[in-house]
Image: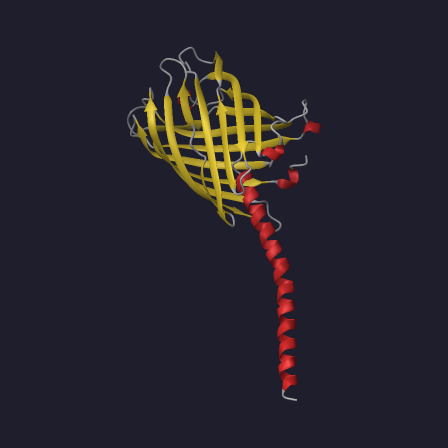
Length: 291
């Protein structure tokens, strides 16, 4: 008789353990699925060739500039509109990305500034079917357009521009993204005879590492400018930032990030940012991807 209570206790312990395990295993699988989804979204929000429809808003505040005492600012609004082959003219995934700018620019070497709308940019990339998806590498090519929509001559370049754009992404390593976007808009018509544009190539490198949950670190906001004609500016900034992806039931995925940027090298650039602080938010619409 003394052994029966012990047997009953053991049965209860085993039964309780089974119940806990039966609840913990699905919870662990859901947690793993959520972690994988957050890691995928973190990379999608930074991938220049993403097929995830997004609305991107960013404010870049520059308290210190080379060549002027003015504090400048730039607000960027951008849409990422992917189009799948049955909605495109060519049998490739098409990525349309229009960008609008509201800029605060210096009006001289002093601290005076002016706020106006800047030139509109649009690139239209076609994602190539090679290399294959299994390699983790994707490449996109297409044109970049710059439209002279600035409401003040100091806020734009007063030129119609058209040139090539190239994007490349490597995503074979889990939680890591390596990417780059190269653009070279070339002016072909001016709206003012007093304005001339130096031909440059811009390179935006991107490195992102997902840490835990929705948190990640990245260096993806700096744009390098290389002048390829005499007198054209060359500017090489470096950036580092942190971000977080939030997913809630009934809400679209939201990405919030902050980063800082420092210009490490400049040549033929009398006026250029010295230190810049960026704050941004991106809202994704996965349900629109199929459209």
